[in-house]
Image (cartoon, rainbow, N blue to C red; front, side, top):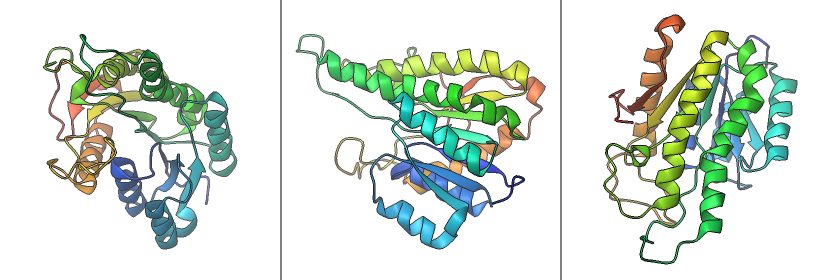
Length: 244
């Protein structure tokens, strides 16, 4: 790996959209640092067999300060900079309980710690490396569930609230990052066939590969725009504006 190699970090790359994003950017010639939560993930192992050292698998728990710090040190030692950060790691929490039911507040805190504070840990900790990078972009994988304007659910408390908070965090980080040459994008990946509910959501509209390909196209379109004009946008995988 050379210092001039373009680099991308994808958290939550064990499977689903994160794994598919890692594959797409490997295909584009980037050195990909893939945050792996569970050891021995088959998909990442297969990618590493195909791409060798171009894929760097990093053990990562975004809910823990020490784990994120170790990931930063790993990237700093091997690349010295970071061009693009995908904050993709997320958990779902209880999606059944309504206001008339018992609510698990301890679990809600865990969901916030991953979905909202986890990405903030990553963005803040990787900021020195991002500022040395060429494109200086953070992509927070949000959700339509984070839209307050379009909220239709009466449950999903932890997930919806954590994603709405992620959207606010995206804007806050962007406001501090843009004067330094960076930008932040919040993206809804679509309804994707993932295992977030403990089993494959086979009824979903998109495969992880389709979602990742569309996300990548939108990211590249945004990167082609002048940084001086960059705003913190909340868009879906097709680049269509979402209602905050």
